[in-house]
Each structure stands twice: as C-alpha cells, then as structure tokens.
Length: 301
Ligand code: GDP
Image (cartoon, rainbow, N blue to C red; front, side, top):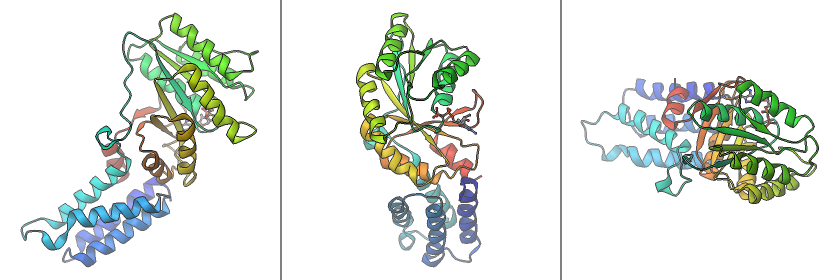
C-alpha cells in the first residue's frame, strides 16, 4: 500500500470512531485494529505496530478518564503523537543526535546506500543545499566500481556549480576518497561530501569497502540513502549498513513517487537514526528537511 493510501485508511478509521455514538473500548479497539492492519500492509514492522497499539491503549485508558474529557479529541491526538514517535528520533532517548556542520573546519560527510537508491543525486542536492546557505562545498566521487559513476557526479556537480573531485584512472576507491578529501581540506572547504559505490560482485565486499573508506576519510557524518519505495527490504538493508558504516542520518528518496514508506518507517525505528531530508523529485532542488510532525500531518492530509 502506498503512503497516501495509508494516510486515507488511518483517517477513515478515526472518522469511523468519531461517528460512533460512544467512544468506548469497542470503538477504540475496532479503530486500532484497522490502523494496525493499514500499517502492516504498508510494511511497518509487526513489533513496532504492536508497540504503537499498546502505547495508544495505555495513554487513552478510557475507564480512568474523567467524564468531561473529550474522548474523540484525546484519541485523535494520541494516535497522531504515536505515529510521530514512530519516525522521531531524540538524542535524549539515546537516539543519534542531529548533525550540524561546524564552522571554521572541514566537515566530511560520507554517503552510503545501494545502487539506484538515489545516492549521487542526493549528494548533489545536499551539496547545493549547503552551498546556498553560505558553505563552501566539494563533492568527491569514490565509486570506482560502476563505469560512468564519475561522469554522472561530474554532470550533476556542474549543473549545481559545485566543485568536484574524481579519477578516471585510479581504481582504488579508498585512495580516491582520501585524495579528494585531502585536496578539499587543503583548500579549506567547509563541507566535503563523499559519494561511494552502491554495488559490488559480493554484497559483503561493498560493506567492507564502506568500512575502509570510512577509516580513511573519518567522516563527521555518514548518511544512508534509502529508497522509500522498497518496502520490507528497507529494514534489513539499513541494519546491514548500520553495522558496517554506523550512519548517523538517513535521506529518504523518491517520496514523490508511489512510496510505500512503511518500510522506511521501520528502518528508522530499527536503527533509531533520524531521517534528515527527503528527496521529492529528480531535480537538484527537490530536497526537503524532514520533520516528523510535518510528515505525519501530510500523511493524514
Ligand atoms: P545511486 O545509484 O544511488 O547513486 O542513484 P542515482 O542518484 O543515480 O539515482 C537513481 C535514479 O533515481 C535516478 O534516475 C534519479 O534521478 C532518481 N532519483 C533519485 N532521487 C529521487 C527522488 O527523490 N525522486 C525521484 N522521483 N527520483 C529520484
């Protein structure tokens, strides 16, 4: 089920509850059942759905509510808050803190993600985003596996007027990454974004390469790029990258399409890592900061 349908189903379940004569346990359970079904069909992990259900029941606790309480409003607010909690990561809960580039030094941001997720596109979008906010930004292409990867980054970077670094001859991605970062550091760039490979003959080789590049460039932030439309696979994919690259943020791409965002919601929850931006199109300006309340408000229309 795509995200827009998920939103419609949740809304419909809440509307049914609102229309019922009394908001009692029966009405609440039937609404929760429908919301949970919709979340499961959108690929949200079953454990998360069960936790959400338990939290909502506990918070609403109908039998202990005073007679004057507006039960309908209480139910709506609680459902909204718990949906936000699914995609919200807070450092005070032990989650990864949000990244802010520091002024007066070079900040290295490394991108990881599977081929096709939208890594190269998102690198350029983020570079432009920072550049427009006054940072001096450089892009490094450390994908030496895929023929044409450097050309693609070059094309994107040129379009965005962002300086870039790469090599047509060096086949060692670690060497290119290190050289690119060293070059931009010596030129006092504020932000250096390293694009990496998304595919290998063996998946394990890809993860090993991410570890090596990470050790060479010592990123201040690693961002995983995740295609919002991949459903259930999002969770295992993000866990595998988390183990090898320990990313601190997620960019969710293709939110403009028929995104089945439930898998992405699970990925956030499984890694307790915040989504920082969402990609909303193929154009270089199609990048929006992610905020949980806005995402859920939009989901529920
Ligand atoms: P990479 O292999 O991970 O580097 O992926 P690319 O950056 O080459 O992107 C793969 C495809 O997805 C390209 O056709 C991009 O234009 C497209 N793409 C990337 N981000 C988005 C997005 O947010 N929305 C849409 N609709 N397409 C995107």
